[in-house]
Image 1 (cartoon, helix red, strand yellow):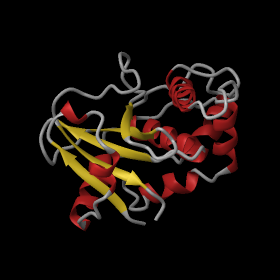
Image 2 (cartoon, rainbow, N blue to C red):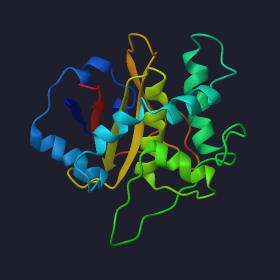
Image 3 (tube, rainbow, N blue to C red):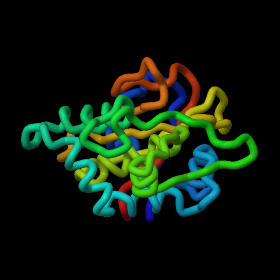
Image 4 (cartoon, rainbow, N blue to C red):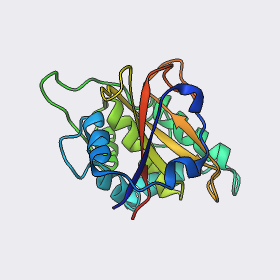
Length: 206
């Protein structure tokens, strides 16, 4: 898989031209920085998210969430997925009140695939940290044909403490990135942490 990334010095680039990010093949050291920034212990973290986009459970969940959107209404679909993860959707068992933010243990880092998160929710187990939220958003939107990405953020360059999802918009021939962070109370689609430095890993399936 080729993962394209770019580094941005400030939040002035909250919505970047898609080509600015996706046109570069990355240096392996930058790929490692993205993985370390996400704190994923499994080196196949990004591949797992891509594989989740073709999981029937993930696809069917996404279709359920966007069922009320008109055909080709990308804005409705993105907002519906975002709101379902952040606030809840009564049509998805276990996600009626959204995905709760829950920190990992101080001495370990857990990662759940989107399908596992959905199965846990259906079993009444609700709680993921920022990488779990981002992975679920990317998988749900990716299953509907959107180009997605993970963005890691930190106050200092090279010290990344947070990750959130990005979606290319519109779905067909996307021209900009929209940030999707469901772990921050005041966040809405497009919101990003102020200041700091970021790395972006595009999930392009190649």
